[in-house]
Image (cartoon, one colour):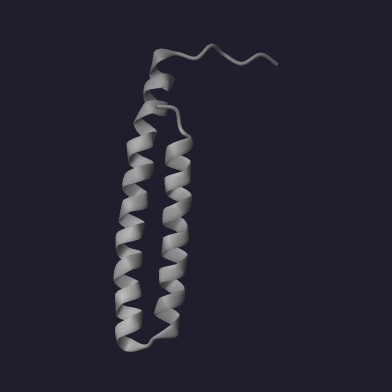
Length: 70
């Protein structure tokens, strides 16, 4: 099975994904950092776990954003 030729629109969409992924990574990092501050302030282990998950999602989004074509 042959794949259709890449059009200009798909190249534009690929380029537009990079800032979206990096913006999402920044948002996850911000919310994760706030959760870290709250977890330290209140000594809540579960907020620390949520912060760890959010920071992991942030790094995954950043990696995905850096992998897309510029």
